[in-house]
Length: 552
Ligand code: GLU
Image 1 (tube, protein in one colour):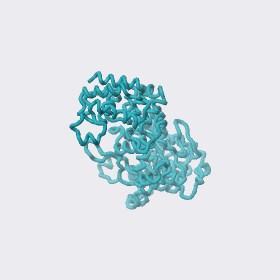
Image 2 (cartoon, rainbow, N blue to C red; image 1 turned 180 degrees about the vertical axis):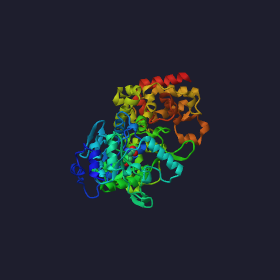
Image 3 (cartoon, rainbow, N blue to C red; image 1 turned 135 degrees about the vertical axis):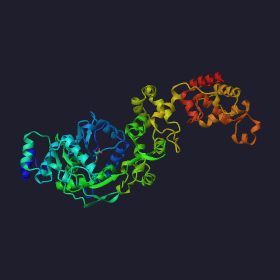
Image 4 (cartoon, rainbow, N blue to C red; image 1 turned 90 degrees about the vertical axis):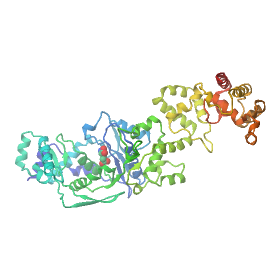
């Protein structure tokens, strides 16, 4: 067979050679040991939390080695694609501060010298490599129709063939003569380009996965499709060309791709390319609420499978990243304790410390991490973030919250920026309810009064506060003032004393503040009451005290 002639016949328009591509995309000049990693999603308009997990691995693995990470869009499967399926993915990364060194940066935009980074724009590259494979006898055109292929499937099923697909004796087009091919092409028959596998059923292939160790599998014997009948490559072929010409050193991807490694290695070798290092990461799992079993996070069943969920709920990016890092490397928490203020992206991430069994994504743990992260934020920072979140997701709240930024910042600052800050906010969507009583009159429920305080006594406390409250006083002075009201009301000014002689009093000074808190905020538990009252001002406080008294 004259392969050169066949290649020209199949690819008359290909003018470049693989050597030209080698010049255009030279090996990268990077320090010894630097890793080049890539995240390669299909543009489905959806970013799965497992995708963020994978992308974070790519970025950290590259960063920790002073290497390069890039974002490549794999849009060869038109069936899975949606219009502008890229922006949602990019937005997800932006929201959580995951930044690639190179690659696609938005719908139709990119950065870096190894592009284009979108597969549909790289067809010339794939055809150039494909032509060479034909020239070398590693690929051939296949004219089998869909009917013929399904007949083949049925035949293999009937025969109980252990290996199914287009290979060996089933590969009808593998040994067509040049004349036969010419005739079919002349007749305008559609064709796909197939890989001519040299694998053997009785040989095995061993490769090293950096986190799983040596993996042994049967060699690939299938003549996989490289180019579909429209000339678009399959994922398998496209990624081989891309990972070579983008000079990827580490292919980090989900474990579901392990079974494809033998065919990928065969393709890299047939092209004459160095096989990259492989890392197949564990899946992100959850404990099913109903069955209690561990299962994969599902796009259909679990809202938290989508990265957009965390944006909508308003989890700060640091919290999600921080939590994902604890799943990625078990020593992250130790490092965090030793480096409380360091940027999480500077964590000396170690690929080899990644786990191989599914890692459990636990929303409750994320919530704890998030409360902790938020408790250390400055009020002004929280103000900006809540405003940005509310603008998109709670427009009514946004209007009241941003009407007086100084007031909103001050209320966020209560019990904050102190040695032991409160940990009561886990995400921004909790803030409207949390701050509600600052903006709206509370509807305090008399049933929430302390048990030992009768409605009559409560009224007395409220009246006393109304008459004698001095907003200028600090916390200590305010508490001292409440104590002075106690004797006339029949309450004990000192908790200790009350405990010694509970029958001698109606209650103690703490009950006074409970009643006042309930009237002013509608709650039994709030940040510092003295500051809350100061920020609300004497007039509003008096109004609320009276309104509650009227209900009793
Ligand atoms: N485009 C593939 C996917 O959507 C990426 C696989 C890989 O990273 O090699 O899963």
